[in-house]
Image 1 (cartoon, helix red, strand yellow):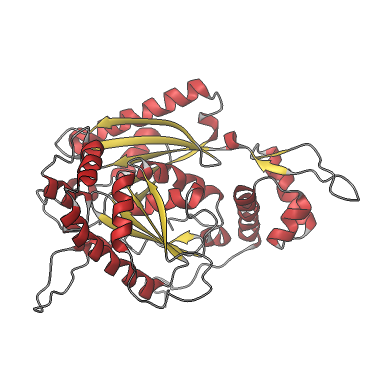
Image 2 (cartoon, rainbow, N blue to C red):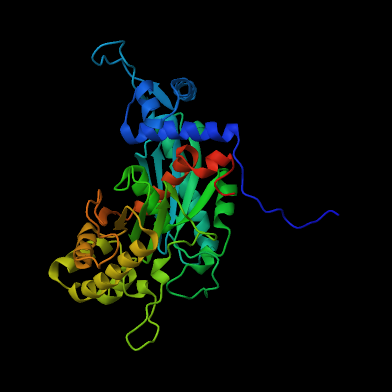
Length: 403
């Protein structure tokens, strides 16, 4: 009898998938270490010399790798180092936030090539999506004029916005972007731009930026704690981000703490976030001089009371993340002025006891990342690069990372 029930099985690997993974391993080694000879690549990746030679030749033919002049090391034949070609690939990242949209273009090394932004009008995606599409088009036009090979080397578009996705929030909820979150924005933007588009929440995007070229470069197991308009986290396990079944993993800002009287408190980000600080300071989060106003307020001590409370909440968040996930480190960064990020980090010290507080650590429990309002857009751009070139389990399976 024929059944219509789906057959449950894990995705198997095949020879093509293994080779695709090995390509990514070689690219990753060159990104992390810089130029390496074929012999050094073979030792570092545990691949055979012939496999490395085949991969390097293939990558060279595709314009992703170039050979430098031979270097003589002690005795023997000179070794020829190989390096990644920055212009071998490009990607665009777009951030959609409550008041603004930002676009960033990066190359294969994660180096920024262009930044553009635009104010988002009120009215949600009906009025805002055309602005986003125009920003993408302007980015492509500018880069094509600067780099003739840009369009041919463009591997995709990354999209990032605040989560959580797929939740039944009302459109007038001041903490959510429900109209954007519950609409197939990625599909619509893909149709408008003619590019592959992947969607991440803002914390996952910022974490991808730190992994590609920031404080988490070369670290495979870490948690990124993102402080912005809201509060979120992103989880990297064995070099690959864990998005969750509905792309909502790490929405730590929505956690509900228990109060001393047994009542349930408000979500953590209602007190520990940029939005909460703006309320405390009575400043408009959409103000063009917001960072300057916050920086001045932190310097004057106007935010001290808020900092004490937010630091206590973040200290608890770090302890929970360490206890649950056992990362190598927690990277703390976000879309805030550097002075605010540093003030919050100081208020988080000393960290609460956890099993992460052990002797002989190679990395600190808390690592300071970047404070940059463009971090999310940078990470959105880094995602297509990572999806096409970083070692990932989906590459071994020889399937799309999105399933």
